[in-house]
Image (cartoon, rainbow, N blue to C red):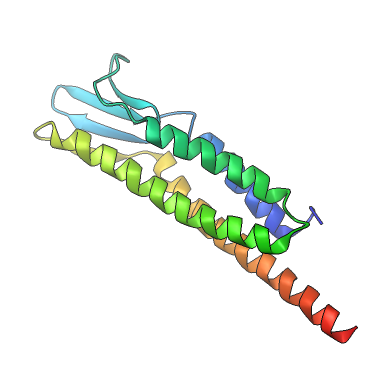
Length: 152
């Protein structure tokens, strides 16, 4: 059934993943201005792209959105939905690590930098919690179906 609580969690994960495309993930404060790190690269305050291309982050965000959307409609096959949810959790951890790598790479190239959090940086941990809640809900449904099959 698609109107389950875990489907709502997965839909929220999809929406949050799409929100990662809308603006900067991080801001690096420099003495002469700043650098915005977006999913598709680093930009200075005037909007000019710097030499850092972060297309793997873009690909990972897009795949995460696609997989979370496909996981919603895998409700007929709960074991596959469980595997996809676990994969999404690990994939989101990798996405956070890759974004952290790019921010550190940018910060390494400049002296006297200060990292400023953006609100989009808090979305991946929220997505991990929602994916865990979806996993527990799917697992609970699977145990309920197995128990009903044993009774028959």
